[in-house]
Image (tube, rainbow, N blue to C red; front, side, top):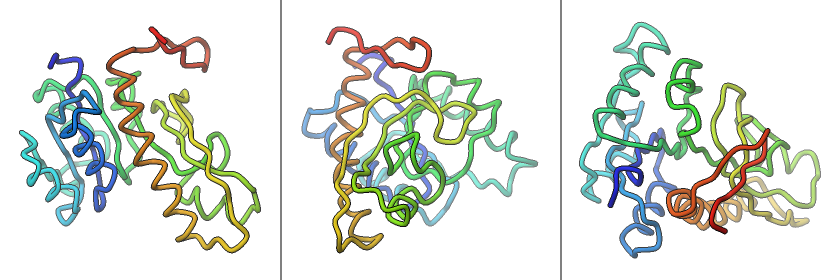
Length: 206
């Protein structure tokens, strides 16, 4: 598998999206190689998932060990480059990336957000959509730029909002779509590639 398929995953929580990516790799449906998993939280379940799966480098980097956000992100970036990763995949990573980090890896950072962007960006896309009363929401895989949840869109999936939905029930159905969409988008990313035209992602070989 070529270096262009090597990814680093940054995660802060239980690691459900990391788990489905690793499972898709194991079954041969997602042709990427997770070389590195970084978490800013020592208790993150993503670290245990990565160790169990045999990811070559699994790191907890403590933000408190660094002078500021930029210094912490520099340490993360150095680890990513040392591991030979071409792409950075955010999987429940709860820290806002510094502009210097985003610029260092411009066009190579991927995130998934639980709404149909540009609607309901920010920390509670699920709850905000429910409170607003939309009938359809979903999830978005996008490139990361300096604007929060603002980068060019790679893929989206729609999820209907039901009359009896709670935040938890709606979030569960959105997550089911995330778990399908994220590995599929990573597969398309490394197999086909894309160009950016304005804000539009134009997929190649499709």
